[in-house]
Amino acid sequence: MERRAQGRERLIVALIGDVHANQPALDAVLAHAHRRGVEAIWNIGDFVGYGPFPEEVVRCLRQENAMSIVGNYDLKVLRFETKKKDWRKTKHPEKFLAFQWAHDSLSAESRAYLRSLPQERRLQHAGRRILLTHGSPVSNEEPLTPATTDERLRELAEVAAADLIVCGHSHQPFAREVDGVWFVNTGSVGRPDDGDPRACYAVLQTGEGHLTVEHFRVEYDVQKAISAIQEFELPEAFAQMLLQGRSLDAVTEAG
Image (tube, rainbow, N blue to C red; front, side):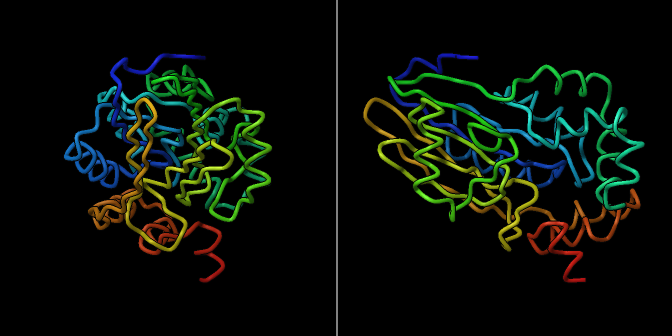
């Protein structure tokens, strides 16, 4: 799917992703982004998962007119009804509960909205080809991280046929140029996995012959998210993920 971004020469965009149902983190990021004068919000998916506010996050991003794609976690949640018998046997109980909570907390309207979203978007602005994807240009479950080699990024750039590739999934922010192609991982708004529990997003400024990317770490009301996790009787590990800025596997292994 190809769309032409706003026709102005200079465009300021908030690049967000991996909100994972953390509404307090999303609120803080959106407020920060608007203070910086962003004109658009591009969201690379994973609206839901682990956090206590799946419905609120979907509704908020729709109200913000964010241009979104669907993430791999969103797609799994949408398949929950058909997969739950198998997943109850094969998935870790806390991971199964996370899928169940996200699915059951979403309205029929929000589930339909997520189903309507593409897995990637292609845009053009000021002569620059832009690809929004969740994981990598070849898989929505391939994590691109600061440790991804230049060789791998060159391979992906050839497949992508784009000048700017915006991704997420790994929850680890970076921006890197390889042979004239920019890769930008937004980091995670709602569930950072790099040991820094602050919300993460990036601001892109692009125009004719001009491109800058700056990542921001934003403090937010973590206690509000944790209180909701406790109110809804979700696992303590979900709260620890937010407090520590680490994945479920890392939190449970440490415990």
